Image 1: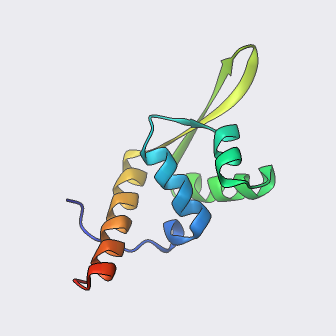
Image 2: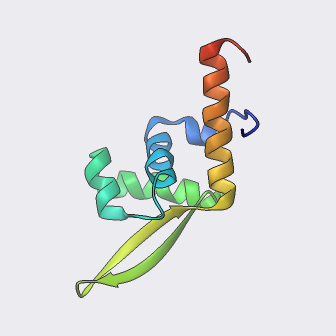
Length: 97
């Protein structure tokens, strides 16, 4: 069980959703995140940039079906931060903080 650590960067609703989606998969394409979160490209890019800057997300350009695509995945540091944040939220909800 990860140590509970509230993370204000992850706590923002869209960044929390980005972390939740990428935590559940090996990688997620930018377009899939955009579709699921219903965000503009610029808004999603801003959230992703903040997570990359903190080294929580990593990006990779891949070519699929002849098109360049951006794939995103949580780094080990990002996964630890996300799971610690979720543990902190659980502690708050359960009144055990």
